[in-house]
Image (cartoon, rainbow, N blue to C red; front, side, top):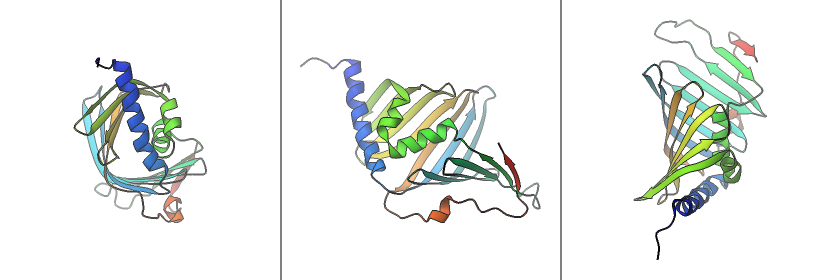
Length: 205
């Protein structure tokens, strides 16, 4: 038998990845703890945070804590981002809320990743893949101009998404590491609903 050409290897590994993603798309609800790392490549700065991601049929919730707390809600094609005041410097501050009618590209990619492998892969071309010791890595080239690169790391033994990394058009590289993934626990509808407070400063874009 001859050695498989790189393109054949990539096709095979993409099929394995799609099979893993289909496990997620069959789940009604997805919950995970995450570590999020943002690196501004041009400035050489790095920020880390921990949080929770929850997904359920086109609805998305992200709670992230680093220097301050941020919540992101996506429901009915409306994005709401809630920034909490920095408790170290502004204990009596108010929440700043931005409401938008469109989701950023990275969020749409995450939702496609969880719900529709075919739609996800339509937005990327496969640059390279590796599969060793159960670790499957795909280097992808985004079709969107707002993303410059995208890397997907999966565990083919546990059939889980380990991490995603992407670089945006302003050279910020974001890595999201998934931990304690749960595909069975039901998520309340209220989880995806932004609850306004009287003091919120709301801006609609």
